[in-house]
Image (cartoon, rainbow, N blue to C red):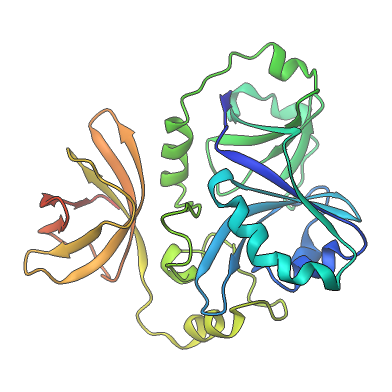
Length: 285
């Protein structure tokens, strides 16, 4: 199990929690249940993604939003102007702890599952399975004495979780990415963070227009870099210095670095480089 200290939980409780979230988030809150959590995002009026998260159901009057700690204040800040219109209490709840659990550690026969289910309970803890990742996301309270936590070796190697995210094309919004990219530049239409059948939300008109009318949408590419201090938002360009994309997420591998990038090229391309470092960028998927 990996300790995910980079994540936090924002709780939305009260009679107006569902209505507030349904009117602002890209996912369909009405589809979220005890057995079905949802990936989602929060956009600004320009259709740019402010934050990303997993939305979970606690009870009919409470939803929990699991997001990066570094963007939790931006999430609350973007929503707080709506709080006076709903019967809702919103807070960052520090009583939760989050872990990543390698799937081979779980005895699948102990889970009651169905094809429609992505949220389970195992040894008293909530497990969330999404995007065919190699790890479950484990949600627990700090006072939980589950044997899953007390008997499983704990690790702080969050890089393994980041590598898993990259291979799953999962892009969580960091401070550096917040407000810069549209959902389609982040592949959110394919990772099902956006529900195109739900009603309006902030930025919805721009997101829908791009989805149904744009002819050359960006694509997510998996890249490999052998050296260099690569960071988010760095520019990928051709040898002729034409910009074709940006780095979105980076993680370490034995052979160097792997990353995912948002790029406006249709097929694999040669002779690409990272502008800020003048080093090659090799597409491997």
